[in-house]
Image 1: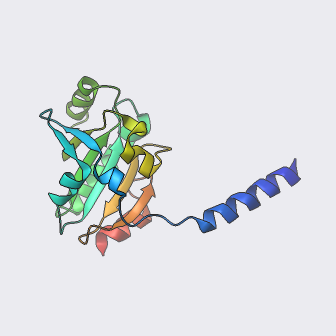
Image 2: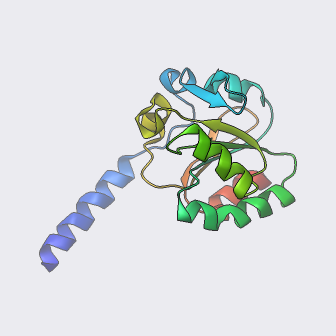
Image 3: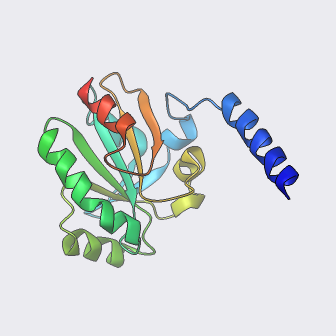
Length: 163
C-alpha cells in the first residue's frame, strides 16, 4: 500500500509541475452565454469588457453550496477592503429562482450572472470547476492572475489585489 501511495504521489507531482494556469480566457469561454438578473443573455466577453482596466474578482458559487455560504463573510471583507475592484458572482444554481433567492437570502452584493449550462458550459469546461466556491482574479490588463483558489482569503488572491 505504501508503494502505491508513493507512486501516486510521484505521478501527481510530475503532472502538476507541467500544468500551467491560463492567463487569458479561450474564445469559447469568452463567447459563452450567461444570464443577467434582468433575464438578458450576455457573453463573458461583454461582462469583462464592462470592467476593462479594473481588477475583477470572479466568485463561482451556488446558493445550495455550504462552503460558498460559509465563505461569504470573507468575500464581504474583501469588498470592504478592496472597494475599487469589480465583484462578479457566477452562479451554478440549479435554476433561476433558487439563484435569485440565494442572492437575497445571503445578501450577496456585486454583479450577478447565472450559468444555465453550469459546469457543462464552455466557461465551466475552460475553468474545470472541481469545487466551489472558486475564486479568480483578472487584472487591469484583462489577464487572469489568479485562476483557481477556493478561499476568499487565500494568500495568492490577496497578493493579486494588492498589486
